[in-house]
Image 1 (spheres, rainbow, N blue to C red):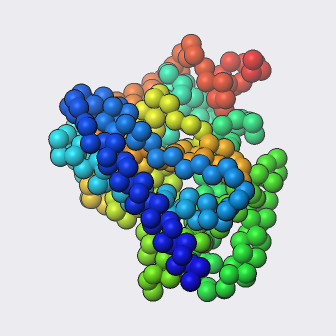
Image 2 (tube, rainbow, N blue to C red):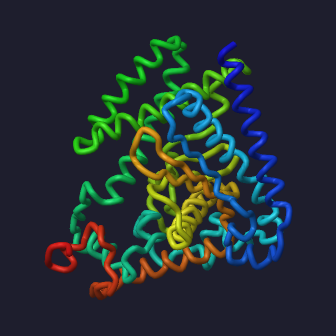
Length: 364
């Protein structure tokens, strides 16, 4: 009965939220301009889905609603962005399965990673040269967003997989919580020493939220695991489009939505870069599996803590983002085909792993 009561409360809250979103997006103006610029703040006022749980009271209910709403919002992305696809369809020559023709066909095959190409933190790709041509190992500081982002990626993936495993074993409520506590200590110790406590608390929030969501689904259907429909660390071969043969997408929803986890709060510049990254993964999946990928969801996680804020930014992976990714890829390939290294960037990223090796000194 408790499970059903919680499920009713959550479904009521979620439906109310969806209705509010639909009402607030009713007066859409200048669709073509918004589509071209991909400024979703113009298209849907308040379009960032915001999940923020800061009170200790009703903590379990909050944790349940966090993951349930996250799953539901990701699943809802295609319906929300369908009109963008219908008004601005992706042409065949920009699909990944057109890897035998320009512009998708690469000039050379270096097995590039999506992050090496899309985000372009180094304007001249000197970081790529140092990694690929000079075999320099970058230095990732534990205080850097790169380190924290990688840690959150790993904890999120573990939380999804471990929750599915715990629920499938039918351990019972208390035993499931004990198992989650054991795994929280194990996962945190495997991944970090400096942030052990925060990692353990973050993992517990996510895994208990996922477990509770699956319990609710178990009250409603005979197959709780079918509710998630998300594959974590989805591995794809990007060789046909000049990328790595073992690309790892953070998560992939079976409805055709690529999911990427990012640390911090979104801003226009970061969101643009991350959307270009989604285009790279879409091209790789299309080239390997021959299925169209039109949608993505960038999940911004504010911090590594017990009660993080989560924002979900839906993305239509349009021609604009695909062209930008292919331009970056071609520029990266051109850099690697040269005999001399590119010049230093005039605007070095503070936490660049190659900062010391590139500049020959300490970080400022």
